[in-house]
Image 1 (cartoon, helix red, strand yellow):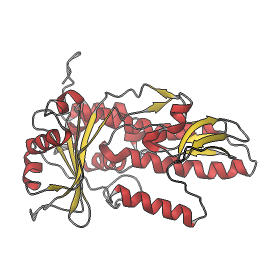
Image 2 (cartoon, one colour):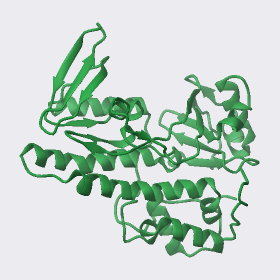
Image 3 (cartoon, helix red, strand yellow):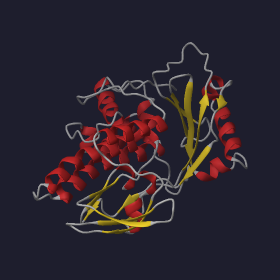
Image 4 (tube, one colour):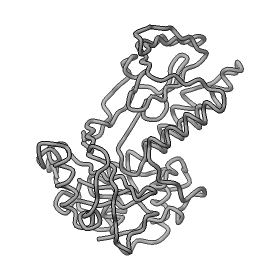
Length: 336
């Protein structure tokens, strides 16, 4: 089965396109933009302690020379991503409520010659035998691409002793990926990431707030991590500005609660992807275009548009639609 999802054809208003860029260059542009606005950026430092406080929160950091320095601020935003600095220091972590999975990924000179391949689109594939194991192929400029595979650790590690061997065997197992990437040449070692899903008991506290992956990360599918990171920053920035002016801010009501509403919508879609409900919907060829536009909106990142029925009641509507598309839930205790 094949299906095309065009994010421009969606229920919610807003952008329907974006850029596919390599992460290193993207991060560098963010740093340069921040410094251009007057931010000071220090590299090679490790935050070793944090003292929350409503007025003067204080960090302690260690530089590359082993020198420890206290840093007192008026407010702290943790955008440390997978490092999850404050979540670790304050023991905020909790069960992410998602099955532990593993990702293998690399960048390649793809040498794709197929004239039907559209470099303006991301290609997602599904393993022909393991339905919960999926692939991404994200084309970049200059003939490069990111290629990854995600699944349960047991299935992925059974493919070989080294990450490179596992990645290559899995890519070769998906017919379209094997054909497209037959001449591909990896330009960086295959990376392995396991147990990446994370959640915290709270996204804010006295004098601090957690942004993006520093607080919660679900799964690479749908690129929800980037959306949550940008959304959390967009919500937090005006609240910090108000707080620094001395205005009262209800961080639970104005930041955490609305942010988690969208995260829970993404969580419903992630769960539906892995248990087969969402693939049954996506690959069905007869559902109304209006429903497809609603689902497209969520996958495009509009998980906070409560006018969309697949946001306001995501789990119930996904289950109902999947049943109408012929999806049969796995029997209780079935691990497939």
